[in-house]
Image 1 (cartoon, rainbow, N blue to C red):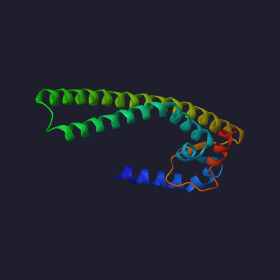
Image 2: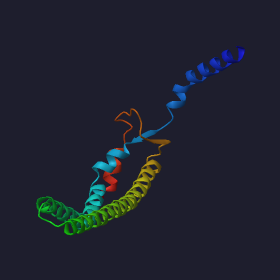
Image 3: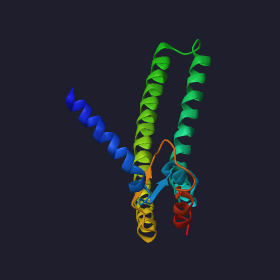
Length: 165
């Protein structure tokens, strides 16, 4: 019980001295999600990825359309086909479906990997800029992802401006 009183007294003493301590600290805040979403550099990176992967995506969409057409033709001709021809078409459709699913999986994996590469390079550049701002303006602490940050400590616009130079 005595230990709790001592701890409470120490905490009260610390809090009473905190305003003078806090007055000497220069704190900044960066909204990294906003930087990633709004900077021209990040948007160019996203467009680059879209352009890089659009041909593959269109090819996959064409194959999916072809499979749907084949499925519709099979359903339409189902009554007139022999059992052997129906089975052959069903096997062919199954094979096409598996191939397209494999292509879609590989596409998602490749896109995810490239997105992570681009994001990593972007984050590294942003981190360097944040450090440059921190050193230049003599910040003691720069925080990301805060519950609340006043516009007085928000350096996000400066980071975006430096990134987009």
